[in-house]
Length: 256
Image (tube, rainbow, N blue to C red):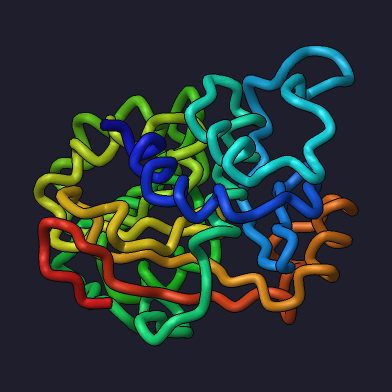
């Protein structure tokens, strides 16, 4: 079962009881709001989109649909549809609970000078703090050749198995690369799924190497919708989301 199928299976029963109040497919992020105001985020993919002015070719209208209909899009081969499905899942499962811990993810795990750290996806705010530990940092992005301290993703099968800590972008769920990438983390003691697209349901990741989840809870949904519609991203989300961390049910003992 793929991670996308796991997310769908986990959230499907809850989704059946909810309707969609609003959907915003922004340039940076996509937001889905339920009838009760709970709102989920997922990154809007900027590559592999349909040519022309219509980038979402799926069901319309989206508003007033049962949440289960949008959740099912998480298994689509179309990246925008997958994003809408993941944002719906996050609206359903990313809720405040006692198992969530606020704060910087780097204060929750141990990174030392002896570590080789993989960052799959460029999370700029983490780069300097990781390098300040003396650890070797390998940043993998979808580029053709090494540039500006980043490595092409084609090097992941060779380099990632050498790493001891991995920060994995949750956009890997959107582009359906998660299941392949996670197979290369076998020697990592910590594998953190990171970013606003992260589903914060630890049970989804049982029997996977994921040891921690670092995502967001939307605290001011109406304001967030306006920001998303205006093309805003994480730098504009201050005050309308809360960054949170929680342990996952992965194969290793988490430190989060």
